[in-house]
Length: 148
Image (cartoon, rainbow, N blue to C red; front, side, top):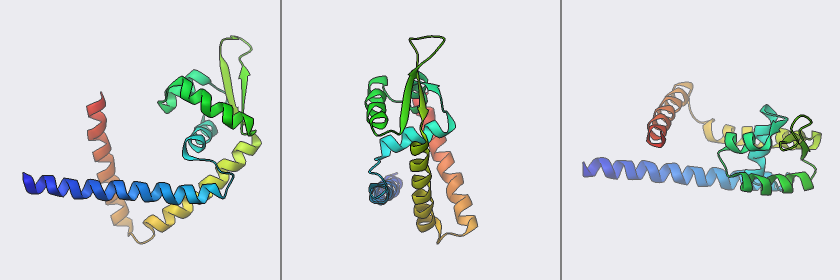
């Protein structure tokens, strides 16, 4: 059992190190592209697929507190990347849309992400990538069961 725990610890450490490195590389790439940090970039990415969404729905979808989302949206709106508009049918609802400039930022970020993916996965074979994906899905599923 102890050997297995040591093994888990080593794998966990490697995973966390990889995640930290991915964040560092991502930050370096996106800083040169408008200074959009991860949280703001994530909002824009979600809006690409869910444009004109109610602000509360967006918070639920992103699994963040509505107040935290409001802070992010204020900054994004100030930078001209999103618009917040009261719903015509229900004035209590605020709808969030991504601007053309916001779409350009997402496009740039996706290009940077693809570059990082090429660096990360370029040395792996198709079989290794398939195995990695299956393993990660299995691990994610196991963790999600703990949240339910």
